[in-house]
Image (cartoon, rainbow, N blue to C red; front, side, top):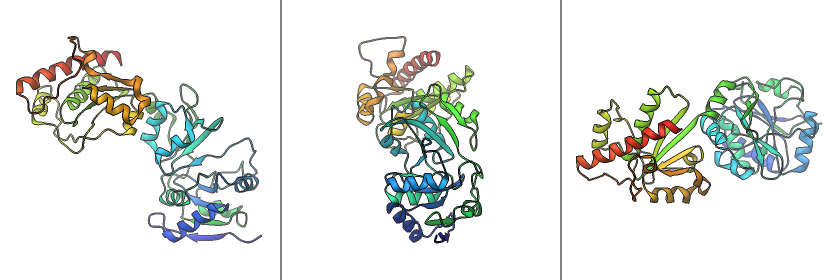
Length: 352
C-alpha cells in the first residue's frame, strides 16, 4: 500500500495547479481528501462506479446509505432533483454556499442529498472536475467526523490517492440536514445551523412585486406592504421587489416623496432586475401589467399559478387590470397610482 500524496494549501489563496491536479484525479476515478467549511471529506466521481464502490469499502459504510452530492453552483440543483418545493429555494438562497445539506426527490429515483460548500478549495475542485462529486466525511463510518487534516488522514493514509491539508475547518462541526421530500420540511440533523433558523426560513412567505424598472410602482408596493405587515406584527413574511429591465436605479423623486408622507424612507433603494432565483423562492408574485407576467413566465413557466396582477386586489375594479406606469406623468397622476397600489396592498396584507 503506497502512502497518500499530501499537499498543503492556503485555503484563502490555494495554488491552482494543485486544485486542477485533484480534479484530474477525480476524473480518473481516484479518491481525494478535500477540506470544506464543516469537515474534511473524501471526494469521488459519482459517475465512476468503481470509485464509489471503493469509497463505500474504505468508509465501511452500508451500501443502502447514499452519499451527499456536492455542487459548486446553486442552479445545478435542478440537474439532479425534481419537484423542488419553494421552501428548498428559500433555504438555498439563505444558506448556500454554506453548511446545510438538503434532501430532495431525485430525478433518477428515490431521494438525493445536495450541498454547496462554502470553501474555495472545495468549490474550485468541483468546478474543475466537471463531473458530479460525492463527498462524505473523511472517516470510517461510526467514528467522529474530522475537523482537522490530522484527524482525516489518521485512518486513511494509503487508502486514498491524494489529500489536501488546509488546516482546521471553519465551523468544526457537521452540516445541518433538512429533508424537503416531506411537508413540512423535516430537520434530520441539527449541527452548524439551528433547527429554529432552518424552520424560520422554510416557513417564511415571500411576496415579490414586479414593475418595469423597479423605481416607482413596485417600490411603492414593497414598502407599503412592509409597513402594513409591521403594524400587524407579522415577522414571517419577506417582501421584495424587482423590475423586468436594468437594475441599479434609485426610486423616483415622486415615489420618495409619496412614501415619505407615510413615514417611509426609500432614499437608499436601488433597483434590481428579476432573476430566476427571485421567482423560484417567491410564494406570490404581484405584477403591475400583463406584460410583466409574460416576462416572468418566459423566465420561469412553473411560476404560472403564483403570478397575479396587483390591481386584482384593489377594491375599485374596472376592465383594465394594468396599473399604468406613472413615469413622466404629473404629480396628480402619481398620487392616483400610489393610492391605487396602497388600496390593493391593504387587501394583500390581510390574505397572505
